[in-house]
Length: 128
Image (cartoon, rainbow, N blue to C red; front, side):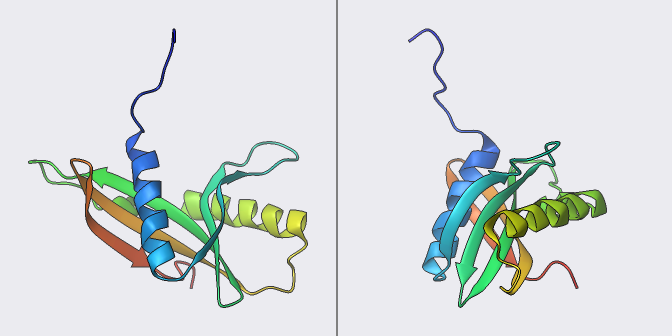
C-alpha cells in the first residue's frame, strides 16, 4: 500500500490501555472518540462508558516515561478542556435523549514505558 499507518499514536495507545483498565473495573464502554455531529466541531470525548446506570465521560491523558522529569498526564487537563468536555457531553446527552440519567466526568492518566502501561491512575468525578 502507498500510505500505511503502522504504529498507533501515544494517545491511541493510552486510550487502549484505559479501555482495558475500565473493562476490568466493570465499566461498559459505549463509545470511543465521540464528536458532536451538529454545528461547529467542539472536540471529542475519548471514552464514554456506563457503570451501575451512570454515564461516565472520560478524558484520557498519556505520557511516555523517559529519563527526563515528566509532567503528570492529568496536569494537562485545563479549565478550557473541562469546559469543552462539558459542552460535548451536553451535546451527547441531547443527541441520545439521556436527560434523566446521572453522569459524571472522570480522567484516566497513563504513563507508558515502551509498549506497556507503567502506571494507570483513575481520577473519578473531576468536576466538583
